[in-house]
Image 1 (cartoon, helix red, strand yellow):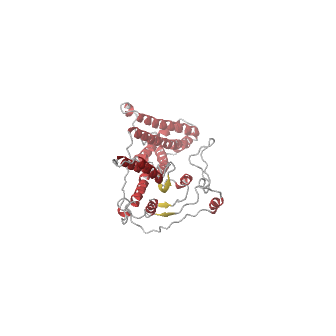
Image 2 (tube, rainbow, N blue to C red; image 1 turned 90 degrees about the vertical axis):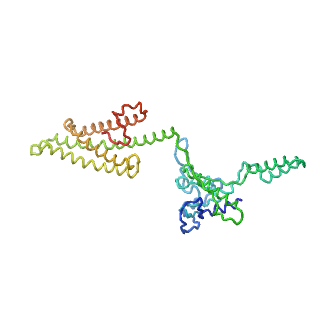
Amino acid sequence: MVSHLHHHLHHHHHPHPPFSRNLPCVPIDSKWTTPSVEPSINNILINGTWSMANPSPNCQCSTPQKTIMLPDCPPGAGGLPPPQRIQNTTDTLQDLTGRNMTDFLLKTYEKAGKKRYGGISVGGVNSQVRMTEPEIEAVIRDLKSLFNSPQDNTTEQILLNAETLLKELGTRDNVKVWFYNQAWHGIVSFLNVANNAILRGNLPTGRDPREYGISSSSHPLNLTKVQLSYQALAATSTDLVVSICVIFAMSFIPASFVLFLIQERVNKAKHLQFVSGVNPAVYWVANFAWDICNYIVPCLIVIIIFLCFQQKAYVSPPNLPALIWLLVMYGWSITPMMYPASFIFSVPSTAYVVLTCVNLFIGINGSLATFVMELFDDDVGGAGCCFPKSSNVPCPY
């Protein structure tokens, strides 16, 4: 039985229309190849004293003095790369025959990342089973001879059923399915592969295994109301942190526009321009136009960064136009509000610090107030008319 399963698992790359992926058969080189390694790693594994229980260098895990997220594995951890080949489904199949599976999986987890979804072990022996099938059969024969009665075969039927049950419960040779528990499709896919191999291994002689198969599908349960609320809260909290970071960055830009205005007022450069015939309206419009042009550059950088990281709350089709409009309108509104400070302060650096702090205070507290108001029920949030809710407003004005 194990040999039949191994045969069908080993040749599972043939197309099986009832349950496999609907991909065309691409002619590829299906030969087994072994990836090359650096000579230093090869020397470590060849010259070391390894055993089945310790087949490769050990990884450093968390200690009371140091906590790490993933094991810190030295070169050569996990052993030499196993033979592998590319299937016609574009999957990479690795042959780990004779390897310590747990050692290999643990020590190569960081290297494999989230690209290794599962595997199948054939011929595993269940060490918890104390009796083999011949021993079970011998015990049942002894019980049959003890309770043998020519007038009634009820006891014999009970013993036959008990023998079948004990054999099924005491299976020593097992097919073990390995799966990556963060890939929701992993357990379904690889368990289906094992079940198909068992099915084809038990087909009558002369039947084409490609004509038989089990089709599986996964229907994950919907999130409960509590789980959905927690996920929504976590997503909103992340978006809030991102918006505060944007507020922090954008608060420095408008405050810097006042530096030159204060400097021109203090050293009488503005007065000289007015005496020379410059209209005050032209002076302020020219400053405003120049400041807006300088403001557009960081706005474009912010938008490009959001697009690169694909923050859905900001760059999704409904939200991206709103983000661009809010950034532009923020600069359009906040820049004139900074100009009156040029008549109050005489030291540019002092004005820069004060205006930046004011922008940060208004922006961060406004975003936090909006976030807190969203946590209340609708019937309690009557102040929404005064603090309109907006999940993607990154600016304080």
